[in-house]
Image (cartoon, rainbow, N blue to C red):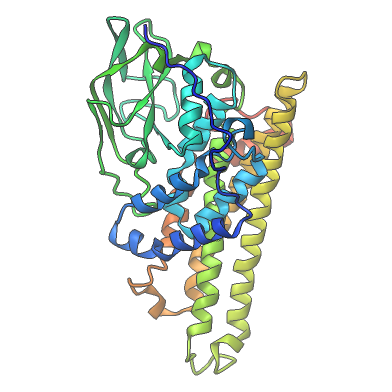
Length: 409
């Protein structure tokens, strides 16, 4: 059996780009410049992702000793909001990567191969995921039809996954599969491995270029050290282990809200005529338009504050993860993330519609693609619907019933 050996990060290696630096803001500004055209024309963001690799943004949460910046959850989610403001598709495509880092690089020690993955992330590599299957009757259950079958000292992987956000742009993919004994596991392998095919068939009306299409695995060789059974994965067994992934989507919507505000204000500023029955001839002086933009601005503020408050709970969980109150801290983080989603999703969707109240019919022209904010927010919000989460939050508040400790909380 071949075991990958741990790589050593050179002390002279450049650190990831600091989110507080002018260089990072320049990166965001460059990504934002092409966002409208990419969304409108379905141009995949390979170039922005290449820039993110070069900036080693994916290593933000790695400790400094491992080649990262040692960022807190609050710092990470602030970055995600800012990135989603620039381009919601690019931000969303990195969701699986940052959750991979939390689960496999910041969690329990998993052997020498973990050091290889850590080195790859430190050098800029991006990890995607291939998870959902349409054959299952219940969304989020543990049934996997993708199989790992014995092949010498390793395995062969066969199956089809329809949920693969970010994998089209990734260097590695984490595949959920079933072992010969029926146990669940993750296989983590290079996307370039023969037999792996990422298909660009996502046709949703929003988040059009997140690389969320089908991934096919046909007789793919998987080495034994590339397979992590769930029973050996302490992170997977922990309650509310998916809270960070849930909050990530809400952070993207908070970023979409900021972009909505930016476009709403710019739209009013560039208007040079108004309706004859409006209170002001000049749109920028119109109190009705000012009020609408003020509402969007307030929504954006509340959304960002809610996400960062939930991120603070994740930081508290990190500090208490191995203590006697770890379960309570995990539940608190899951509760705040769920409450943030319930509110932020609604604010983002409503603000995407309010945008057109400051522009009139001409704002619906395809060129500016202003409807992308509503479409993207609505698509993000459709992940793990807030309606069900609100029921569980209410049940907890009234009856003290804990939230479900599964992958959607």
